[in-house]
Length: 330
Image (cartoon, rainbow, N blue to C red):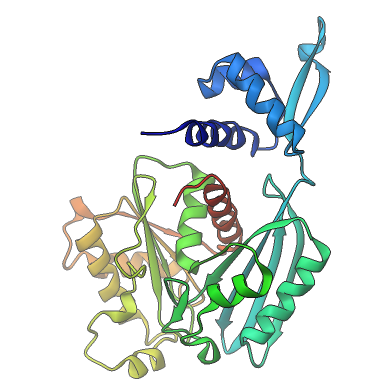
């Protein structure tokens, strides 16, 4: 049974998620769109204004009549620091971004590293936290399995087995969340496109490393028991992982891409299969699709789409993860 604190937290979450789009609303508008009573909205908005989370401003609605107070999120109230690391075409990099309460990018930096270890991560985090002392959460993305705060099967050897969440939480006394990069990308795609009634799988093929996928199933990202659902690098291709990585270049990767696509379509039956990564070009999709038709009947084939760049989806997925965690959601 929910107690009053749970109800208050849930109702404030409803109001917050209405305001995160960056628009201003009156209490009456918030009441109509949220389903909460005007009296409840008044109580919650007063509390949120008192702590500085929202700002109330007098404004004439429709330029006529008396002024009414409208509310918006305070962009200066808090910050979320997002970091993610990558190894693309032999180059290691760490991206640091600071997001406002409405997801606006207030700071963005990409730093290359020859050695990308925990010390490098802590240095870049410290720089961002010094500039944004109002940070409330740290959201971390990794091109690996993120199992209970520990990095597993990492493309970056110096991060293998690192208990990153506990290290960062001990260092900075802030809540830290670690997830696979594909989790954030597919979640960001879902939030951006607002597709609630489909199963969508995103497949990423960067050169020289194992591929990854992620699936959103009618609004829920599939994670699995060990948080690596979609790790098609673990499929049996009749070769070792080392041999598979050696083939992760054009054109030798294409047979493996086709095999993985057939497996994903057979097991997940998605509406859409989205392809990204520097091993894939848009012109490849028809050829891959034709090869899949040798095993999958046309009636059960998903739509194939190419996404050139997923960076915006990546950050949006991190942002919405932070919003959900602030509201006590998984």
